Length: 341
Image (cartoon, rainbow, N blue to C red; front, side, top):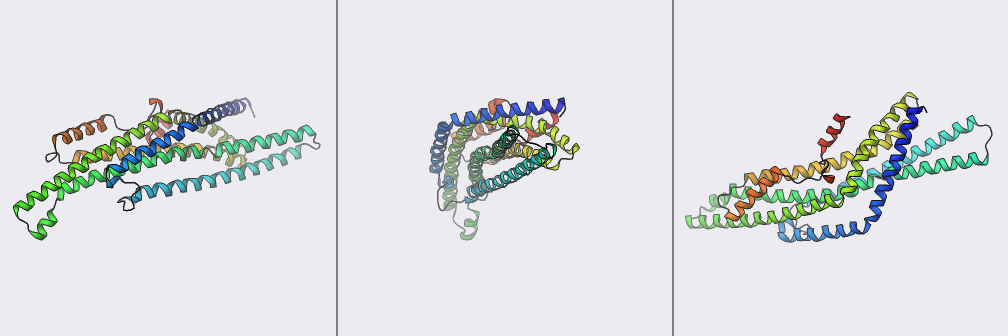
C-alpha cells in the first residue's frame, strides 16, 4: 500500500480500537445501571398499564395487541437477520484468510517458525475483529427494543385520543336513531359521553407524561453510547469507502465484499435507530394532531388548560431523542451528514 492507503488504514485501525474499548468499557461499567434502568422501565410501564384498561399492556382482552406483538416479532426478525449477517462475515473472513495464505505460500518457498507464528497471529486478529464488528448490530437491536416499546405506548395514547374524537363526533347517534328516545334521555346520554371522554382524556394525559419521562430518561441513560455509535459510524463509513474503491481498482472481490460487509453494519445501525426515532417523532406528532381535533367546549376548564398546554409543548418542544443535545436522531440526520460530506 502507498502512503495514503497506509495512513487511512492506520487511522481507521486506531479509531476502531479506541471505539471498541470505549463502548465496551461503557457497557461493562454500566451493566448494573442498565439492570436498574430496565427495572425503572418495568415500574413505570406497570403504572402506565394501571391508568386505564385501554393502556393495560398485560391484559388478555387488550384492545390493541398488534402494537406489542409487532415489537416481539420485529426484534426476533432483527436478531435472525443479524445472525445471518454474522455467518456471512465469518465465511468471508475464512475465505479471505485462505486466499491470503495461498498468496503468501506461493510467494515464499520456505517458511520459518516465525512466519507460521506471524500467520497464526494474523488469522487470530482477523477473527477477533470479525467478532467485534459483526456483533455491533446487537447494540442497535438492544437500543431499538426500548424505542419500539415507547412507540407502541404512544400509539395506544393516540388511539385513546382518537376514540375521544370519535365519541364526540358521533356520540350516541346510532342509539338515538334506533330507539328514538325522549329529550331527557338524550341529555342524560350526552352527559354520560362527556364524563366518559373527560375521564379518558385525563388518563391519556397521565399515560403520555409517564412515557415522556421514560423516553427522556432513556436519552440521558444511553447518551454516551448513542453519541459514540453515530459519530464513529459516520466516520468509518466514509473512511472505509476509500478502501472499497481501492479494492475495486485492485480487482480483489473477496476483500471488496469483506469491506462492504464491514460498512453495512454501520449503515444499518444508523438507519435502524434513526428510523425508529423518526417513528417515535411521528407518534408524538399524531398525538399533537389529535389534541388539536378534540372539542374542548364540553370539557372541564382544567382539562381545557391541559390540552392547550400539551398542544403548545408538543408544537414548540416535541419529544425527541438527542444525544448530548448535539443532534436530534431522525432520518433527517442522514441527509444532513451526506450533504455536508
